[in-house]
Image 1 (cartoon, one colour):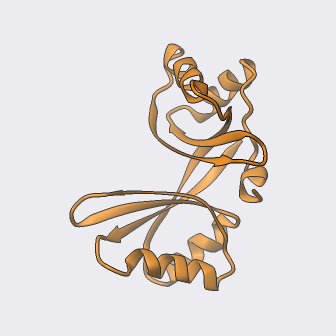
Image 2 (cartoon, helix red, strand yellow; image 1 turned 120 degrees about the horizontal axis):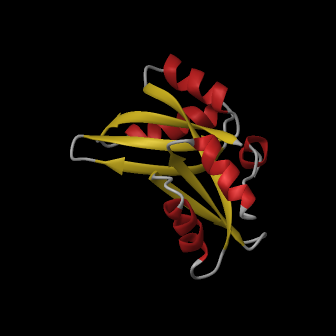
Length: 143
């Protein structure tokens, strides 16, 4: 149930984000979800792509500072309070969420939240035990 996330350390300069997306596009890699956190000088671009191994290699070969991290995907109902229920469940069971980002799939009526937590295996077991859908990596890569 682990999903590979690619993180790229980027200078906060015009064109850097465009260079990453162009490189991935030319390599035939499709971005499924992304998040960017920035400071005044640098940012971290987090990506879920359809082929993380090829994305990692393409970015590394092009000279980007890149790393790979395991996250989990959680499917939540796209309604008010849907995210809160999942986060409360994790909180009440001592699972700390380091960060998250999400997107909504209108066709399924759900939102997919990508979570970075400590103790991924424990978090997955907890979520599944409470009926929360945790899609496998292949499902997320092929959305």
